[in-house]
Image 1 (cartoon, rainbow, N blue to C red):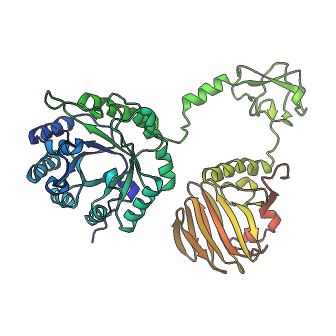
Image 2: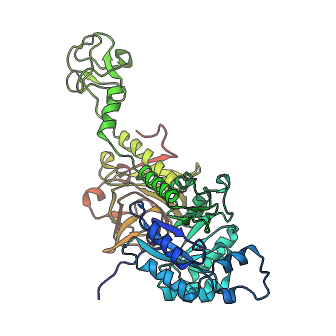
Image 3: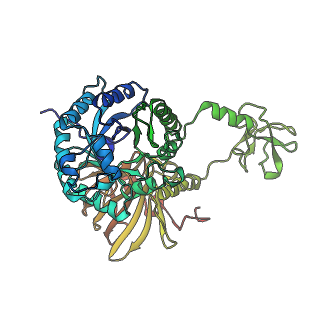
Length: 515
């Protein structure tokens, strides 16, 4: 049987644009089809899937027979009513678009509408904010086996928690859409930062932004994308004399401007990594200060801070700068006053102290802990395991933060990117690893494991194990009591080393303690 890739919740909902037709078809089937035709010809940002969204209601049963006929919503629903057959025909016109870019999305407001959506072959269902605690409708939606986007407009955080818990319990593939259920929404009321809170509260879910701001406003979407919105929704319309534009729907030109802003924002936010561009390096180098002799210096002298100064620009190839010149450098030949100091030409830098490699690595260790939001007090010791020497610490080793060691033991371990901890076992200690941030590749008893945040692995006494991380990892070790000299290494060259030879142990962050 062919194995098919199953998308995770986050993968499924990445880069989605929803175009909500709502009642802007005005109960006119041909006008609804015209909206779909016109908007399907716009230029959409690369990488996005676009869904035309319809709202389904069985008005014959949805509206109570004694409901006031002059109610705003009842008048609006009745005046824009489509029959079931018309709704299915309009849905089919979306499904028949000759472009893989587009799909059909439906907001059902009653149980009959869910059945109609199933009949229409709907790709996505939307849970409207007003239906977020309509448990009978949610139950029916969860039975459809159609992926869901749930809106959070007007909900309390506890309501959102309940909705998330319900959909998870039902095994529904879903995401959340932050919105403000005020039409139109003032920019100052959009509360875009709440997207960040939702992402922190539900890190396994994709979070989107459903916009009801005035259609001429194309800046808020940039803010939404900046805080991580992965789904975007906008109401669309095709204004005519008898079919006016409302205050929160976009005509084709307005939507195209909005789409262009999305493209721009994605280009600006394309990568969170620093790119080492040659142009930048060259530019910085041109503006650096070079190191120059402050006096005539004789061959064989050892440089002191009083022997050189810094000045712009760099005049000689290979010249030392203010960031590279080292105190204690040996002078290889006589140097005239104001002449450039050049490595291996007229000066030779002193050997690098092995503690430099550990101190340099500690900066990265601290950054990984900060990224993982790990807070430490001042009562811990730090072990830097360098099984193949301090110089090779970034390649082979690990950082161990000792928190508690009683009848039970807790440590926080940091594995730098591409750093490997060699194969070993513990004769006495049983330990369980739990990943806090990043991922960890573990070999235990000959089996390979790739552990992601939240996952655990228990290693029993006497079991050979090793671990490494491609991108860097922070993980917790909870174990029985730790004993020194309780590690046996497969590599005999490591096993021959004493504990002091393969570890540097300091208090706190090792200020002034590394020899």
